Length: 329
Ligand code: 5HM
Image (cartoon, rainbow, N blue to C red; front, side, top):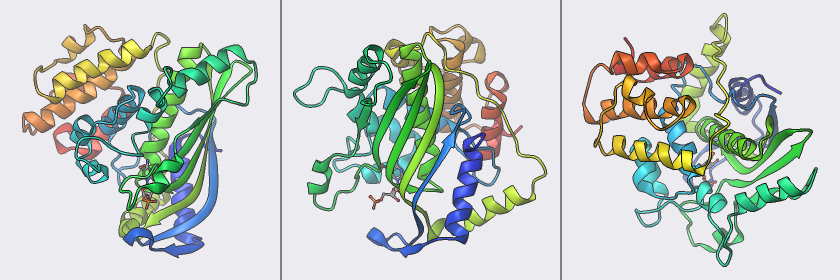
């Protein structure tokens, strides 16, 4: 059990570095591996690590979470925030198994309701249900020859107990340095979104991994992250606020309309513009992040506007300042 994802991330990096069980080379990736690990976050909102050597990208994290919540699989949106994701697309248009939101938030073939909505309906009608499982990995993925993008997420499990919504996540494999942080960020956002839809408090988040590994090519960075954690006197901690209770699918669509306008540079927003948009203050934080990225990508600026940075949550501002020089003033 860890107060925030940062503690779990550091503990797992240490485990794979100091006590790995296997050295593997699957599909050309040499890695140190531990089989079968898990951890719990009692407060899943504390889903960002604050480490100067890790340079977490909160803009991508919010983009990915929204991309999942909207049930999308298009490369166009997500590759703007993470160009490396293009490699996982079989056709250059969509992502495959790793577009988890596409599987969760759209009806399966032959159905009219999404698995996510079916599980919410079940949890609304059956007290203490043990059936709210959302499978993601599908047997069909095994049949694709040389599959470039096979889901790492086996499934997400929602359990409503005593007025709180808990989530258990099962991953077949997790890259502890690269995949883990963005996965936990997005899955706990899905959990919180589900809790809001059901009118429940947010419960615990439990994460299980089959193959937990660190790629050898990232070993140097991992050493630096562990050294930073050893040397600092006090960890940074910025408690993250609760998702707005009025968040609905329409909210996600509205935020993504602004996201697209900013991504395509059709609008430029000041902090004051964003404060007067048709989205609540919680989601305005995401729009502020997308405006920061618009300035970095389209304006070629060496300073992001002060008003936009000042309007951001201090934790998000801290992460941006450590990652992008134009944000470090
Ligand atoms: O060969 P394989 O399909 O297992 O390679 C996928 C790699 O991406 C693994 O190292 C897996 O742990 C990592 N990964 C992750 O950690 C991939 C995705 C995308 O599905 C993810 N988390 N969400």
